Amino acid sequence: MALSGRIRCIAKDSAQNRLALAGPARIVTDGSWHQIGCSRTGSTWRATVDSASTTKQASLGSISNTLSLAIGSNYGREDHTRGLIDDVQLTIG
Image (tube, rainbow, N blue to C red; front, side, top):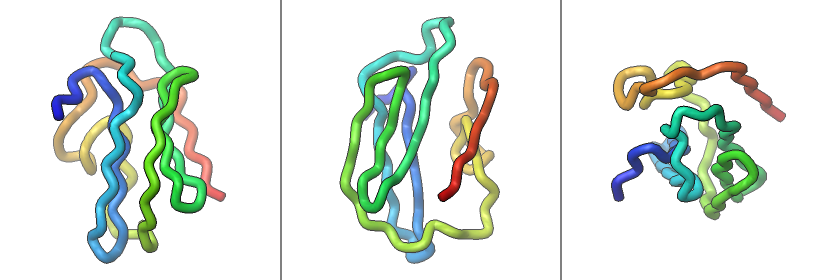
């Protein structure tokens, strides 16, 4: 599925089980600022753009690993963001 202009949330647990969740069908490459987010509550994963969300159920194990957190790219190596990212907030808990 082509996701050009849409957000995507990806997580991989320590057993290499992977979750990929496409955000709502809202294009974020329109030159406007958007609030985006990826979150998990229990086994419910949510991708949000402005006030619209998509959810997916997935039970992953521990997602701790030795890779750095990447925002705007695939583990800091590919899929780099074309545009600006501002005001990043990370909440754990």
